Length: 311
Image (cartoon, rainbow, N blue to C red; front, side):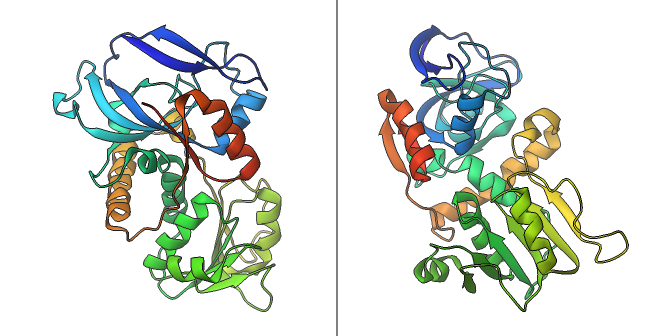
């Protein structure tokens, strides 16, 4: 089998398109014929800086969607022909190809009414949002604060609202129309004053998240989606804030089979919500496979979701 791939050359350089021989999948794995590839900020950040020390020839990419065309030893053959979406490890050859080998236990079956472009746009932001949501015990009617209204937190805000939280967001551009659509109670253009929150969810970075911690009530929660707060803000035996760290990619290295099974099951339920249009998802910008480098640049400069269609 041959595969068209986009491979890493060196930190900061454009990817190079190549044709490679593709072997049969290893035990416990499958080959997905990708019909769409999701572009995420983590992709261009790792291509620019290479923190995982990728060698020349590594295939980047974590998100993809397509059809299962081969299964390895120990994999149920009923997966063949299934429409799936997946999030893959940054440490292995990834989704920037027309065929990708991934773990059979880490793919989500995609409803027929969800097209591949939309499905490929979802795994990283949707599963990250779900992990963030799952960190905090549900308390209906509690006020929560969400900051950094990108793809992850737009999904997270809806999950929180559907669970019965009163959702407040900090954003300079989030509109009232979006708030109404996503169940957001209040938009703040800066840090709220005169109010405390049960939990806050931040996707701006640990310094900004730490600056919001004083807004939490005693026994509150701070969920850091873009880097953890290393040093607690409060002294011991005071407000006893719970600090939570989110890193979806780390589950590939440290999670076990049961954790992945739960995450995949939850992810499939969320995809059913997307199909039922009870979870609002922004339509991604679509690029052709030959223009994958342009899609990366678009994601980096425009800060909007991009996917790559694979014909």
